[in-house]
Image 1 (cartoon, rainbow, N blue to C red):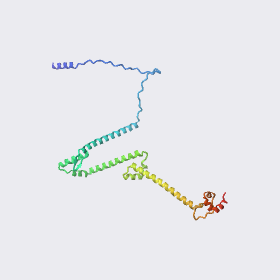
Image 2: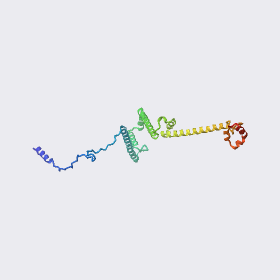
Image 3: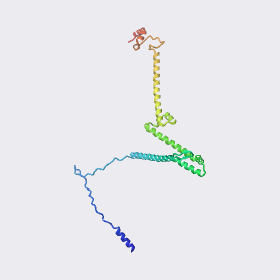
Length: 261
């Protein structure tokens, strides 16, 4: 009986209440009519040209690059905030200030070892001399160097997008091997090459002028040649003489003129 009473009370308490009815305006289903020909027309939907697979891949790559960059920048900012906080506390360990989170964690580990009577330097020596650890360090160093080279190559391609790898001169690589970034090494090598080309052209021009001068001084038709007794002059040679030269070689010129046509 008690269950029946509880159920009847619950039924009364949970009875439904009639909600006021609301009337919604009826939506028109009529199609708009074209006034010109009386035909029903459907409003044109906004259509956008579909992206090609290449465009999709390009935009996806841009998004991934942006997300990776933002994640890296966020991590850097978070780490800098931690390091700044540690530095602001002015902790010291073994007489040296602790300025980063990494240094703080290292100090905690060393202190824990000291509390246990263990010299931290011995632990570090054992770890650093472990062949596996050495190999890992070497691999990490090589990877960091390769990453730096890849970034340098990308920087070069950005500065000189039209230069092919085979067009990079040995002089450029020589400068690059000395520690000069590739794009600056290429610019320096190109400038040096241009200067050498200009100098070579100048030297060739000077050599040509010297040879021409020597030929003119020793040629048969030259008036100024020393040690040469010339007795015949062509019309063209005489026309090229100065007044003093004509007076000096007047007799020879007059004899030569008899044969001119």
